[in-house]
Amino acid sequence: NRNNSRVNSSMASLSILTEDLALEIASFLPAKDLFHFQCVSSRFSSLDTDVKWRNLCQWRWKPWPRYELTPERLNDLNTRTTWKDHYRRVDRDATRTKLKKSDLLDLRWFLTFRQSGVRGETLSVPQRVIFSPDGLLVPGYPALNCEIMNETPPSPAHIHKSQMGDQPFSTEQWLKIADYPPHFITKRLSNAEWIITNANVILVTSK
Image (cartoon, rainbow, N blue to C red):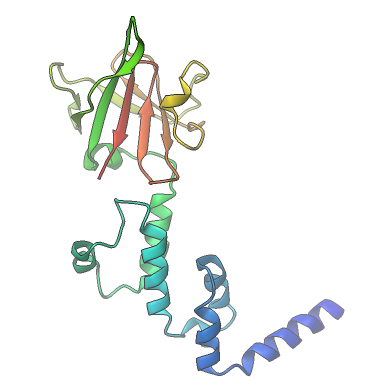
């Protein structure tokens, strides 16, 4: 049919591209299109686009301090893995919106209290806290039991806008800390950091 003829014609046109021209085209493509381009054929899949993928990694990760390509991080990266694989792995992790227990245990968390007074609501100075196998460790408090609840959370309608990130709270999970009100979970798109909050406290990750 006509559609198949167009596809076959397009594939035939691509097949006559020289490697240099194919690489030139690849150099102008954003990540999503480059993935698709290299899936067109085994020939394009084997193109040496590693420099292009490294540039995409630098551009994509720059707003995210946790992933930004610093000289130290460059030394730590596994050189046996291609930059294309690095991009895919980090992008999957940075845009993931489901909190894991390892995120609690392995990342650096800071807690801020919301305080009410005659001048209105203010925020306390952020303090370092630790999620351990024994619970949440907050200076001045006993270890607080905590558990990720993989279920629909209560309504977060009462949460002040200043406590929210740049995307909605998760509708699939929430964090239970001792007997305190439910803590809602979200992740900032702007820097790929987690936010866990209720009406009284804000927990955030930071590099």
